Structures are given as structure tokens and as C-alpha cells.
Length: 369
Image 1: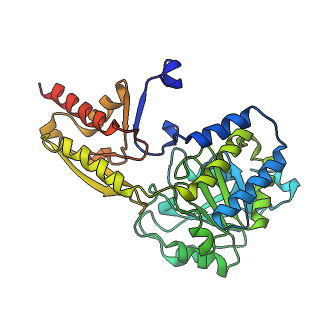
Image 2: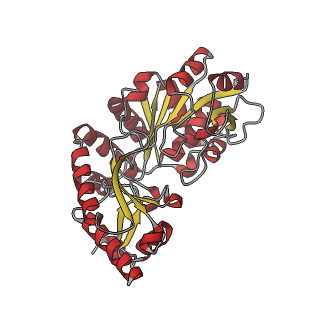
């Protein structure tokens, strides 16, 4: 029995992905051991934060780093850092940035909701969001012409949530920032390559510690030493209510040290999802295929198209039935409104794809009988 079942909570089969709402990742034994040992001892937190910054730097290629309690906190802390720098009086003012250089430019199609609003995270850090262009089309001129003497940074959101067409590239936005001597921030929360954007020249890059890294609930920021020192200083200000504890930092460090040895399991993902699709192939009203992640990551999900006229149940209704059971089965549902459900193989324990296929067939048999 799991710890959650011992609390009286339902067992969860997570086929949705590294989702915050489902606890993000299940950590390795080594990371769990780091969490346990840190929880049972003491440390000088300032020393630990600086040490963690050096570890983050080692594994990202950046000059320095800053641990956070998550990528969302990373947006707020990064925003505050480009407004206040290391000035303690300004740090203690945030999020009140009236009269300061506080505008954060973001492409309209990237001002998304990821469980909360990107704009709200910026505002928590004292930033004033300036959306440029349109939801499905942004020109380079939109970005350039939005820059004023109040612009504190340009922010790029690299996410499957963001609009994938009609946006300006990272390279274009970064060049605009460099040409105008403005910090360039990338929110790369769920990205798998921790060195790519620093190598491209980004000033500040934000990652989740609980997604691709498969660490505990945490996050980290990496970038130039000046900005990372400013980020860590935000824990004397807006960072205080979102501080990460010794356990989270220890687990994050352990996960970073493991990450270079993580093997690419794309072939295994495809094999498992092919097996699931084959199990559902004869079910009338279901059309199954394998699709790569929208943001181009090496993630291969089973996609299930539900034809309600043949199954007798719509995709939203099927999803509700799966989530209401025990175990509760959570599928990826970003396109449920157009009849599509997806199965993400990454969080699935061995054999759980069989449980999912059987439960879908059981529900459809019940509906059709």
C-alpha cells in the first residue's frame, strides 16, 4: 500500500505527464534518500543555496544558479531580479515597482495558463506585462517597437502550452534583447536540455526540478553570476513566501548529479504505446496513433480519438469515468474538447498501460451493453 493510500486517498495511475496537479515526478531511490537525510539534519541555508548555485552552474554550463520551489517561482524571482538587481531596499519594495524600470515584454501567444497565469507570476515579481502582437501572429517589429525606457526584460515561454505557430523565434527575440542591452529570460520549465539556452546566449533560464529532471518539487534558475546573485537575494523579499527548504535543495542537487546518466527511452515509450494502441485497435469508435510532443521534446504519446457516435460516450465523459474510478486514471486531456485523449508513458509504472486499456474497454462495454 502506498503512503497516499494509507491516508485514505485513492490510488492514482498517472498517464497525463509530469503534471504538478498529480505530484510531478516519482523520484529515484537516490533522490528520496537525499530528501530523507536532509530532513533529519541541519545546514546553514545561505551556504547551501550558494553551493546549490555552483552545482546548477556545473550541470547547465551557466556561471551560477539559484534553487527555487518551482519554475513558477522562478518566473517571479527572475522578474524581481531584473527590476531590483541586488539593491535590498528595492528588493523589500517588491511587488511595488512604481517608478522603476519594470516592463516585461512577452509575445501574446505565449501569455498562457499553465495551472496559473504567466502574467500573474510576472506581477508577483513586480513586473508589468507588455503583450506584443496577436495570439497567432507576432512580427519582429511588434517586439522592437514595444521597447521603451521602462523595459526591464524580454521573456520567452518555451512550452507546449504556448502557441506553436506565428511566434517569433528564440533567436530573433534574443537578438532584439542583445541589440537593446536588455536581459533575455527563457522559461524552459519542462525542457530536457539544461545547457541549450545558456549556450545560445540567454541571460536567465528557468527550469522545473520536478519534470524532465525527475527531482522533488523544486525548480532552478541559471544564468550570469550577477543575475543569479540578484535572484538569490530575492529570498529577502518576494522569494520568502516561496522559499525552498533544505530537503528540496538536497533532492534537487541529487537529481542534477544523476541527470547526465539518464538514458533516452524513446524506443521504449513507442513500444509501450504501440502495445496499448494494439489493445484498443478493435474497439469501434476509437482511432489510435502515436504522436510526438507538440514542443518537439523526445516524448511519444498514444493519442486516442473518440468518436462519440460510435462509442456511445464522448471523450470528456470517458475521461470523467476514468478519473472517478479507483484507481483513478488520469489521461492527458489538452484536446479533449475535440475528442482526443492521450496517454503519456513517462510516469507509468510497469504494466499500467494494460490497466488503462482494459478500463477503457470495460467502460465502453458497460455503456454499450
